[in-house]
Length: 455
Image (cartoon, rainbow, N blue to C red; front, side, top):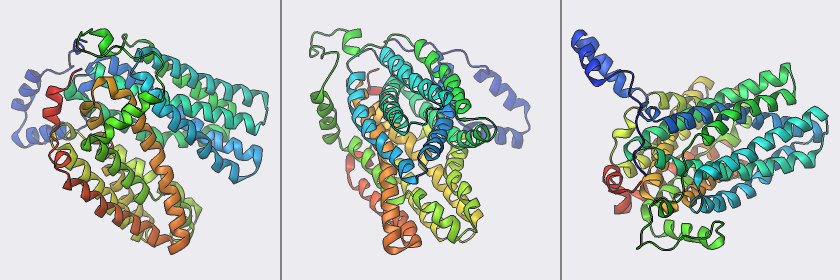
């Protein structure tokens, strides 16, 4: 596949140099520093990525609105927090199964068509939620089924979209593209719930689902506008390559993807350190108790939940330096160490503002680690396996925090709030350093991999 044609940037390098010459020295240095620190927008020069990023960024706000509306509706129908908690369990199994299988399918078929199909299923689930709300069905079983189907479609769409990015961008833009995507998702994670609260307070569940459906059309449009993205062995026939696999792969293809990870320490450790970070140091299950016992009441819980996303958003907006880091394995470990230490420190805070600031520092480090994990995966893995490995990525990213909630809650019950919070953060910061004992991970150089990686 030929490299995508970049759209000419609005400001040329010559114009920028001229501006610097006309600017007083101190101000010129400040402007250059600001430009180097600001989030890198260069991937948006490429039309396919620009449409994908814009569509999914806006659609994710609607997704977050629905993520709030569904639990509220389930509680209204059942009157039980048990069934609200079951939403996570109902969605987890489809997420794992279809994350792995959907990734295998993405390696065997045209990724554009698979992204369109899975997006249509997601859109259909939102439409079904809208219809049941308009009809006032109040069916707990229907809501649980729709959540399960939605989780399956989300897993397939996310795996496919992650495998699409390296096909529509040059390798040197992938880290910046992931930064843009993660920044947009964290902003949506903060804005979506606030918007959901407003919509549900003023209007209804139907209005919330209608808003999600309307916003999701932009993501669907972006998928439709993609070029054809068949497997590279079909797009570029090669007599030395193995024959094409069946269009609907089964368990064997999934196992091949997992086996590939197990023989590549760089990939295996990139997943492993994320599991360590989320299972040992994710404190969100402790926020309700901390709000009541330490920070003056339930009103503080919103700040605690928003703090990590706020920190991630700020880090994303000042992330121009991320693409210039070559030793991404070391940078990934360093970011997770900062995450663990910031979480541990926030567990010692007795003032809400200080806890929020420290959690925000952790959120900033989490965004950096997420960008490097995704970038390592997308550039290190061969294209014929990217879908399957993206499926594993989605399972780890979605499953790790859920296991972290279980760990935090169980540990708090056994040893107390502070020990569960602080101890988990410190254990994360110490344990993740073991990854640096593996030479291939410690010496991983992103620029070497990018220059040798086929598109």
